[in-house]
Amino acid sequence: MANEIKRIKTDSCEMEYFSFGTGEKTMVILPGLSVVSVMKSAHAIEEAYAPMASDFTIYVLDRRLDMPDPYTVADMAADTVSVLRALDLKDIYLFGASQGGMIAMTIAITAPDLVSKLALGSTAARVCGDDFSELSAWVGMAEKKDATALYEVFAQALYPKETYEAYKDVFAMMSKTVTEEDLSRFVIQAKGTEGFDVLDRLSETRCPVLLLGANDDAVLGVKPSEEIISRLSGREDFEYFMYDGYGHAAFDTAPDYKERLLKFFL
Image 1 (spheres, rainbow, N blue to C red):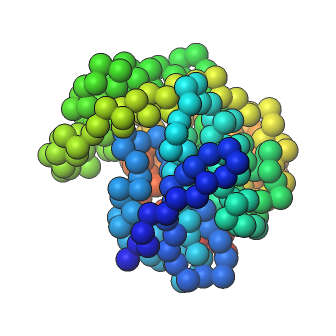
Image 2 (cartoon, rainbow, N blue to C red):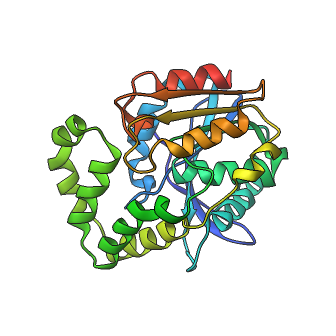
Image 3 (cartoon, rainbow, N blue to C red):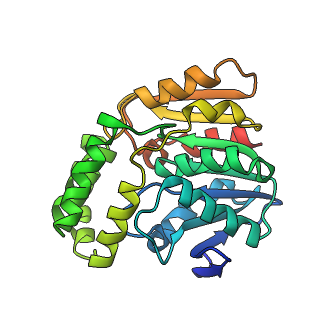
């Protein structure tokens, strides 16, 4: 299954990643904000993206290890670009989910030479004012070191009610593994989203773009997807699909999600 977690050091940062797949094309996944590092879920991620592994060699990148405070989405994107260049990854098929989508958009705008196609899942081109209210509540729980409460509200916001109810004992168990360092990193990353805004720069993206949004997104709401659609809908190289009933984490729960990604990328 998944290769071991590797580390790469650039002039600007050190970052963990893993890769799998045998395809000639290169796909890069930038995960969303999480309470603990997605590197701990490498096996599950590889299983989820197995249908794409024969067409792509897939890299999953974390955030930097030594995380400064503050650390904005623009900073995250700059560090990710440094890692992509250090790994000599070119003409990438870039998929970013949630905060990872914000980073992916920024990369497509600031380093267009790297990106062949861009897929965005449950994300926003700007986060300001009331848009930050849900994240702000999470930050408060993390700052109080209440991992149990944080995991509960985090999971409830991400997943449909039936999914949460089916796995709430698992979420409760996972919350007991959260460290103070995990919570500190979570706070820095969440705060780094506030004030993010590339909405007026979306037209600078040169590559084809796919947006997969969710009408029942309890984290960001539907407005951010509508804003992206309104800015890109005149382009022939833009397409989108809005899910019903799967919530913010449609990228984890919708059964045809990977199929839509694969169809767009190929």
